[in-house]
Image (cartoon, rainbow, N blue to C red; front, side, top):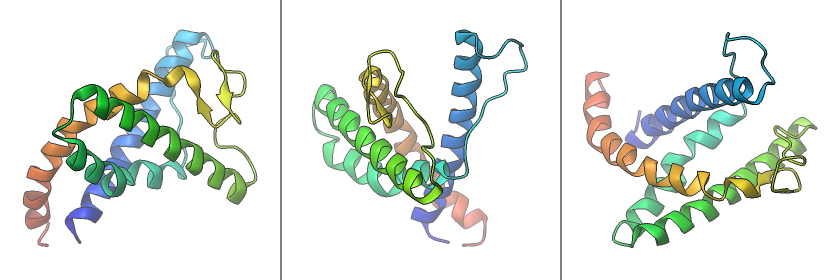
Length: 149
């Protein structure tokens, strides 16, 4: 197994976990969930989207590393919106249904696939991923070695 594949798998798992936590909490806070079971949801389709952070985000972060944080934040916003739109569109075409539909989101959306009111969420997410990326670059060689690779 390669380091890139290992990080792809780690990001995919982290993304799934984050999605489940996010949907559980937001469903409860919005009143969609009436109980405290905090049942979050995700989809198998989302794994490669989150895993692609290893392929797309890491090189972008390395390229933008010396830039002022606001420049990095704007780049992350655009990048995540593009991935969310393209990934959502591809899943929609392959599965016959939109994987998410933000048509009625406050603040509006683009074809129901990206939310305009996430204009601050994605930059913060991108900036928060920077130390995760740096940590995984240090740790994954040891993990791979421990796995016998």
